[in-house]
Amino acid sequence: MELSTSDVWVMVSAALVLLMTPGLAFFYGGMARAKASTNMILMSFVSIGLVGVVWVLWGYGMSAAPPLLGGVVGNPAADFGLTNYVGTADMIGIGFGATFAIITVALISGAVADRTRFGSWSVFVPIWVTLVYCPLAFMVWGGGLLSADGAIGSTFGEAIDFAGGTVVHINAGLAALVLVYIIGSRSDFGPKGFHKPHNIPLMMLGAALLWFGWFGFNGGAAGTAEEAGLIWVNTMVAPGAAMLAWLITERIRDGHATSLGAASGVVAGLVAITPACANVSALGAILIGVLAGVGSALAVGLKYKFGYDDALDVVGVHLVSGIIGTVMIGFVALPVDGEGGGLFYGGGAGQLVAQVVATLFTLVFTGVMTALIGLAIAKTIGFRVSPEDEARGVDLSQHSESAYAFGDEEASYDPIAEEVRA
Image (tube, rainbow, N blue to C red; front, side, top):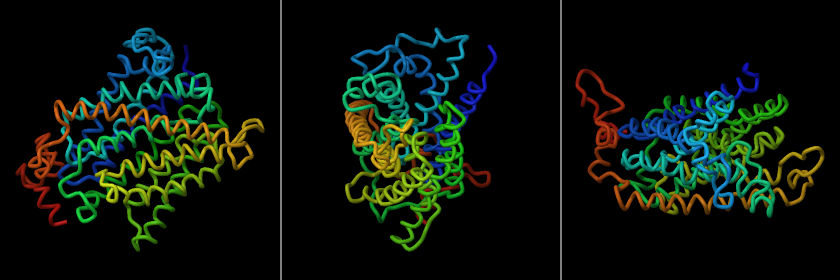
């Protein structure tokens, strides 16, 4: 069987989405403290290996196979090892789906920077993907509870989530919040202990790779050229608008705009347009981007008010902008063949209700399941490094490595002293 144009596009998109995880590693690695940069990068990279194996063995079956438990999850045994798909073109879509699972769990890592045991993270990743990501992906995209024929979707209406507002961003953002409360705050957490990104060029490179890969993330499932064009433009303009909105918010609030704000604004806009990219106009995408930029710029400071140490603002960006993008579909979704649409197009409140219900369900499901997993790991093998290892830096304590070394002496760079000087 020859490759079709659509097959080639999905393969290219899958490669773009896979590139997003190393891009996230650079983004987080640059944002992190110097003494935690290598650990931060490795937490993303190891997620690729762990989730890739899980996806082949049982993850894909759980997200797409015939339903179990009343539509909560697919049957993991139905497609174990993907043996039924060898020699079929379905492998292309299966690989594309794996890249979404990988980036979702990797997103969580930024919230728990500086203080998490690498071994415990490596246990958390496959368990969380198995018990949280795969069931939610099935419920939204695989014909489960939240789909049109599912118990919730048929009652309240099917929510629109084209590329992962609920499955990826709200899911990862709330999981990050739960883990932060379980693991606890860093020793110097607080506004006075705020550490700026230790390597701004690395952070900006990571943000650029994320934006580049996101065109595959949003566009990989496009069914027509017209839909692909709309997705492309929306994926360009929403993060652009969010970046501008974040920078203006910073300028008004703090008196200056920053590279961190620009990069964070881009990511916030990308997050917000993800569920809506195929279902809103370019003007709607701009509105969503502006709301995400302002909303997340204001939300990142809430961690000091409520006492949760979200080190790299996963909650403020992914959870908040994920909710904004998902709920705004209920207002600005385009009508289909002249029917339906969001409130602004006279479509009534039905779509808004569906979006809100899906959001609330995701928050409850993810919150409960992540808490059970996180507490189990914390009470058994432990999630947090010792205070001494935290002060020394998780790069050295967890990996016996440092992101930076100068000259011939391995220990010539002292990340603790460097951060004190900074």
